[in-house]
Image (spheres, rainbow, N blue to C red):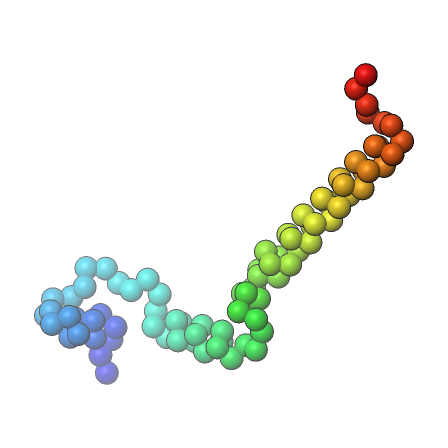
Length: 84
């Protein structure tokens, strides 16, 4: 069986070796592909840290903005912080 470099050379019609090795081993790439294709979650939640970036950060931003809006409404209704 040909390795990845020999396969690429055969496809491209070159006899010489590739100048640099592949970025990831083919076996590791295939195992990652099988893993991600077997997970039955939404696409944006398949990675290990995707819940942090897709759920936690937007919830924290929404909570912070609601707090600031609530504080502004309270200050306006009580007349706190007015410039005279």
